[in-house]
Length: 84
Image 1 (cartoon, rainbow, N blue to C red):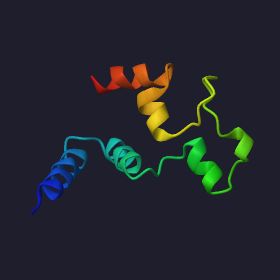
Image 2: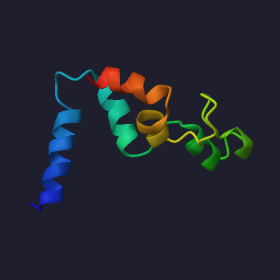
Image 3: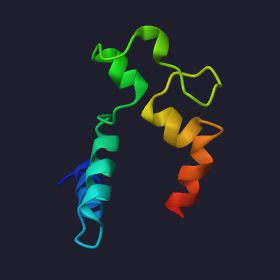
Image 4: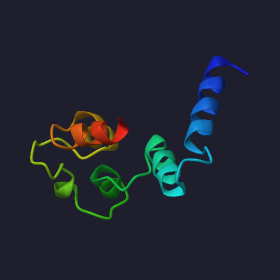
């Protein structure tokens, strides 16, 4: 198996570990596959209008999973607390 394959296998094992609650595993899997219902994804699927794609925190950035979990000045620190 290649190094990339080993990293994927290790991540998969961590996400689907028996001690991780199922809803956490599902959410993590959806996050890694960019399948969370972020506004960006909802616009792409024509569920909401193009004008409604910005983060609700009001900083003018499109609401993507990367923005919500890593970049948003409001929500990223909260997820950092959850992670730790």
